[in-house]
Image 1 (tube, rainbow, N blue to C red):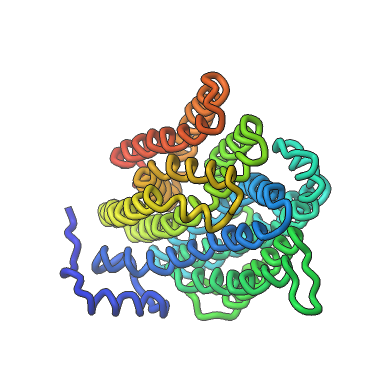
Image 2: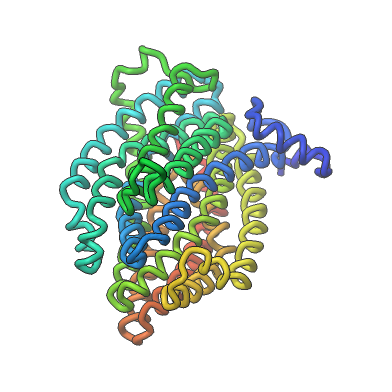
Length: 474
């Protein structure tokens, strides 16, 4: 087995690596220290996904300051549950772009990597047009299908309409960052999310609550702030994609659709998208189950806990993204053993991070949830949900790395089948039985989440060790 060519990290060397990662220094991830490679990719990716999670938390904080906050919080939560389908499409296409760009970069063919990136943009634009138009017309129906109360639908329809109609910025933000990550340019992906979030943080209090001559738009202002903020981030991405110094740089010759490349991308993206749609549909079902068995207070408490949970899951997902880039580039460089060692190292680091977060939530859940809501019943349910769901954090972290290892290799089918069995054939029936059959109510849903995620992680680890992902050609 290939050994990692690195010495022990000292505080000084860690500081230098941290600075180098934040500067976006060029790095060949197919040679040298695996530890350094993971560190150089993971730091900006963690910060990138941490910024993605800030979108939801900032909105939740200021929306919670409005009157009738339980209806506003429920609207944000239910809309995000449906938007998770858009995220699934965006992530599916971005993981296909990451896998293909990383493989071409590993083969030292930057021109082919840039060409594949442009074809991924064509696919995403076609899909987003359909989603945006549907969301504009079906916003009230979407909330009704999710089990929202009539007052929630009345208050929340404009918010849902803008969030769904503006889904193009979600799609492009995810996709272009996937392109940068595949090229190993995690710094650029991080910076675009930072810019988008800074804009959102500035705009949220102004557009939600008002400032001086600018009137407060309430819940609708949250949608405005988020959509504008993401749009600014996308403009920054596009500028650097066409005019920057990244490994991937688009030229006019890339604009012509290349259907063989598009078919390859769709072949990877389709099971990849289904992988996340399966998970997203499960979360939508669980959100509705909580709303049906516990009504608006339970739904608001659950949605608050989910937002907090995701706030810490997304940085862990950022570290897991490092595994996708390392697998793709090392398979392109004909180094499958190094690819496997990179995944195992990333899983170890993610386990440590998630263990610390789990202990924090078990101890401080009351304080964390209380920061976002002061309503006693909403807070009580949120604390219970957060403590129970965070009990599986270590398994969440390992499972993310395993899934991204498969996806980075272009083997998007394996995690899709794992999700199908784990979510639809295990998590959903278990949640239904516990919440309705055994009359546990929302508590049954909370329990089903860590139980199912643990089973999914064990299955993913066993299949990863079989090693068939090393043979995938893209």
